[in-house]
Image 1 (spheres, helix red, strand yellow):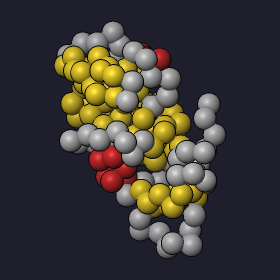
Image 2: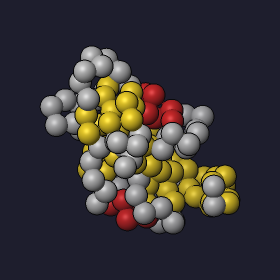
Image 3: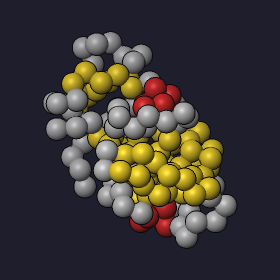
Length: 138
């Protein structure tokens, strides 16, 4: 299992709900949300206009992607609460098949993972007894 969360992502007047994978190995200098082409198109970010082409180091080798600094806002939508809205750098990947939450974005959301293997998490401001469950991949 993994930790997947429902996010509302907004770019300008466009908004989209997605299920995103928390990837603790996605180290970023700022809050990054990596999204596939389909989501980028829905948010008006594909084809790329005004993005910086970047190369990311991944376990599978270098990945060419497009970075939109501070282009969007995102928040976690849990069943009974929401996170604060966070300004995000959006990275568009031509090979991603689901959105990815970087380490710095997880920190900005105030996420506390209780078990990656069982997909258990909570917000850092919640009591340790308040355990939430990962969503299924769509």
